[in-house]
Image 1 (cartoon, chains in turn yellow, cyan):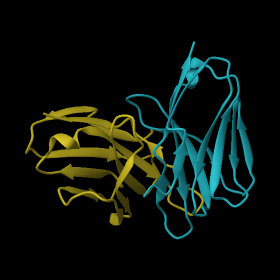
Image 2 (cartoon, rainbow over the protein chains, first blue to last red; image 1 turned 90 degrees about the horizontal axis):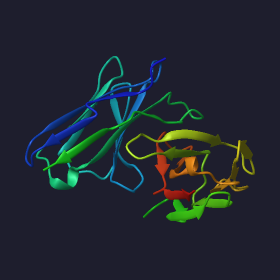
Image 3 (tube, rainbow over the protein chains, first blue to last red; image 1 turned 180 degrees about the vertical axis):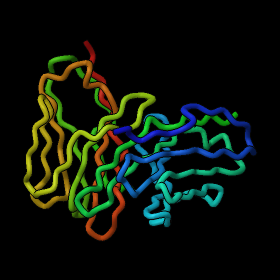
Image 4 (cartoon, helix red, strand yellow; image 1 turned 30 degrees about the vertical axis):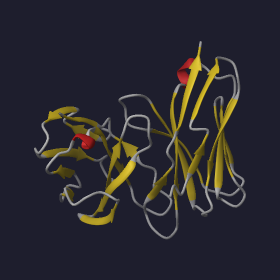
Length: 114
Length: 111
């Protein structure tokens, strides 16, 4: 089975632009979470989606939005990019049951804002 | 406020030495997971511990979940350069379905 796939792998954007990142979860996984990871730090939770509905949101501004599609894939959108948005954006999928919260991560999208 | 505190934040040791990293909280977790992340890659799940006092071994890595399910440790015996990476712990609570993450321990094993 394919693991979590994210696209693109690398992206360079200019301040003020908008970006869309994509994620396909592992087959059978219904929950997708998005994380922002700055170099040398742990992942910071942005969103969690389950069955197309937002289940949780981290401490990120409204410039960040996401959605989940019927096939459980997901997109993360960031508007009005700032230099500080430069980071590795990680998508994780999980089966989403009480004892199956293990998160399986994609390789991430490295976003550089210049 | 970091709900899961990892220590040390950074550790650099020689190949062959032993080490322990810690993951502590004042909250009770239903399960706790350890991940290892290499530069430019996503974190990879190493182990999940569920029962208080549980010990799991993965080759030279030993994971322990505290009796009260508030803390965990990762012990590496005879560390090797291939163990270098960022070690992250993440906890799950019965009250919701989200993982709570520590900030990570950056481990460097020098040949």
